[in-house]
Length: 210
Image 1 (cartoon, rainbow, N blue to C red):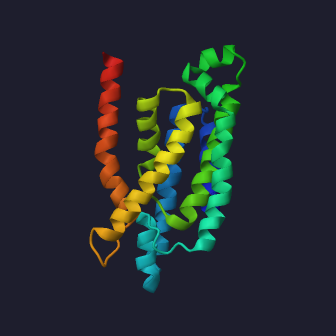
Image 2: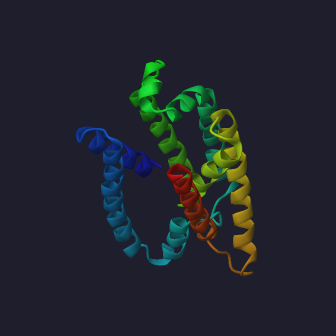
């Protein structure tokens, strides 16, 4: 969890020092991600008998999660996930474009920073115990937005419910496909999410290009 927050802070520092544009945030994240991957490889090379558990964490798994871990994740994650619901109006303004949002009184830069902080904290809390489970945060919100429209008062709660349902289904599949072996949940979500996200990108591109 501390590592995730540290990565976020370093990414923010690099992005802000280099101009603060969206591209700089992406490039800053890439640089920090590569640095942390190097440290990760060093740690794995010294894992020894714990290598199996470490690899499962990297792919994302619920296999080693205890009920104490669940409560540690559930309470802060739920509380912080509800915060954006109170900012749904501001999130809707951002969809109109930064310039129009500013004209309507929103400090877009400050608001975006707070949203990134919130997202980073939630992600760090969850990843600390279950590992990296890919494509859930990419696919689910886009899918909900396609079905419900752009109103965050609907999209946010729908994303929470749909994301939870997807994780339960993926965990069930991970435990049942190759009984008695358990697959990493992250592998299941990636197999589902990759083609689905590609489809969403293609459909979105066609929508904007006519």
